[in-house]
Length: 218
Image (cartoon, rainbow, N blue to C red; front, top):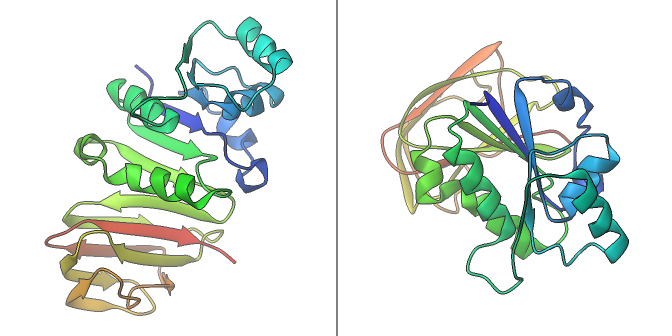
């Protein structure tokens, strides 16, 4: 069983962070989604699994993918789930400690929003490990009620908390530039946008709802 699974979707390559540091992690297995498979191969990363209808690659590229990979799950374009959802459900079934998703934002907004909202899929929320969506400017995670400690990351100085449910109750922030104590926030509020950690570690907690944390830089 892998400790980590990294998934590269087919979003614009210019939105994908440098994958070299992640490729050096020998404890991680890779999966590619549609054109993301091609981008992995171009970087010398051979994914363990590939998902997609592959309507975004030409015949020559598809031939290269076929020659390079042993495990490909090719689907018809007309299906109920997106390729990204199928890949994420596969990753969750492997029960790793960490899942990181790249190439899932940028480009078409419907694709970007759909991918982000996959993080509140019932099976995703039930997953006990860490799931993170990463692009060049942002790192996104979802949280259920509880108390969490996060480490300061100088390359992602801004920390925003956005309610995904209609309400999030009892949110408290400590170790932040703008602390909070047992506040009630509603979906659409901007109260918790663009905060910053002022210590090496900070803590946030809340008692009900679903909270999205976005760590970002300019």
